[in-house]
Length: 288
Image 1 (tube, rainbow, N blue to C red):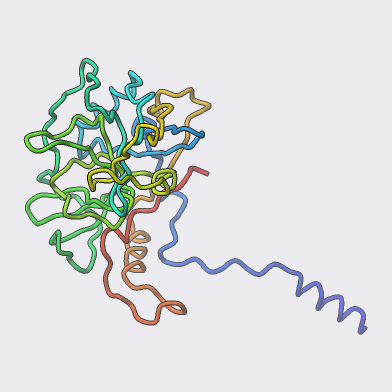
Image 2 (cartoon, rainbow, N blue to C red):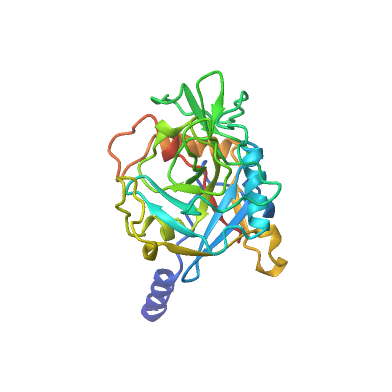
């Protein structure tokens, strides 16, 4: 009898713990939507380091059309990452600024810094110094508005188009990714064309540049070579990476936003009652 009791106790202690109960903010499988292949830019850096960027053609259609054309003709192959500005941005493209753009690429696109329709399906509780409201689009983008126009904010990992002084708007040949505290003062002053989904560490961990107070590398020997930049849709089907974004048009995502605005114990003692849009970036993942 005692042996049987001990055996039962040992069996019970070895049994796996039941899975935790789902939270209201947990997504359903259907909440994960595929990033289209023609919206995914794959940048391969020296050392087989890859950076995956989702493009935003709905918000910056002309700039994204340029980027697609540049990738199609392999314009970035052999170019480099030539600027790493601490707590700010990493920039890549042609450091000489003399390389001719291929046919069909618009040198001075429309500004595309903002647009008249704000179509967020969520709303953060508090405003911020740069907008009167912020939230998320149904298809997984952070959005901000002043009540008149809307825009993609400069959050960590967002990708923008480098440009010269106005009236320059940037062709898309030189791009940058935010690697520091969100420089929201750039909102509505530069076109945002996408977001790094994976591989930001290959950019954010690079040695900082020191030239001109702008983070430029002083010597060409410091440049990080770009091996290739391709749209996933231009890769062989078997080699295409697949990513998903979490759809925001459902009650589970609304509960996720609320949880981001009110972090819970045991680690957090007090709820903040709000969150910056850059602290509530829509979740993304590799497709399982």
